[in-house]
Length: 356
Ligand code: SF4
Image 1 (cartoon, rainbow, N blue to C red):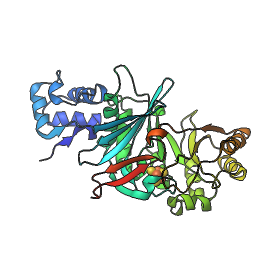
Image 2 (cartoon, protein in one colour):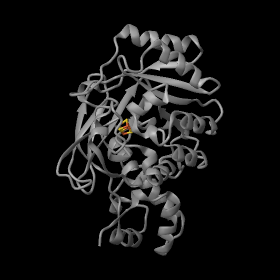
Image 3 (cartoon, protein in one colour):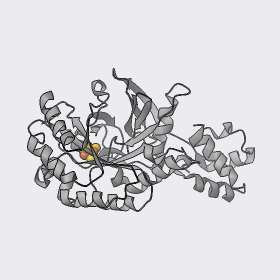
Image 4 (cartoon, protein in one colour):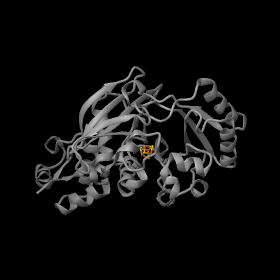
């Protein structure tokens, strides 16, 4: 009989679990505190839980985060972690320090099935969705690699895969991350990035999670977006922006629009002006990401003056527009560059995938 991973459970589900094993409810909080709070995954080491409870748990349950297989440091201080899942599939997470912030970029799928033209993952297809435990397990695994006293301050769902395509697991993982008896992250410090799945955005709006939302926009007409992102055929620009306008943003929060700048494709002054018009009236900010090259990519990064001119038009019209020089470029950990051999997933022996 395979063991159930406790990382897949909400703290409230741990309460019910310990009660079903004859222990009082508060033992569930203690169990969650050991795992999510202290990062202790050895049931035998949970010294304030009664021995009988630990034994009963060990018969059917385990607490197993993904295994850190490799850490690749980048010159800019970011670190790419290659993580091995229980079935042998590999994913990546990236730790990105920035002043007093330490952001962890998480994956939600093995590979990705959305085939955005500028992203290598898109060329390789979907392996499988991750479970909630595999998503939050990346926080535990990454935390283990840090010196004591160093905290992960922010979490972004921008690694391999599309979070809203793995909707139930993503939402459950968000609840575990933000639960005071789970990881206790403030929702304001968590950002979910989506390729633009309108039904998922609408569903997320009803969850009352209050996390930040980032939209991969990347074009200013539906036609151009359709060429770059096949998902636009199902949910076009108008439908996507409609869902964004309806999304209940918490006070003082802005929705982020990600825009990868591709030379001669979406980086003209006309594009910048159209972007201004599209975002008019929205509490929005734009992250401009100069394209990160990968071998065989059909795009190029625009020259710096063109990048700055695009940004200047947004700023002139009062739109917060930040240039994001992706971290970890030299180790293939930047947006659109993550690349790893997948040993499991859909049964391919060793497919190469990458992620945004
Ligand atoms: S950009 Fe994101 S959604 Fe598009 S193929 Fe890459 S990982 Fe998938």
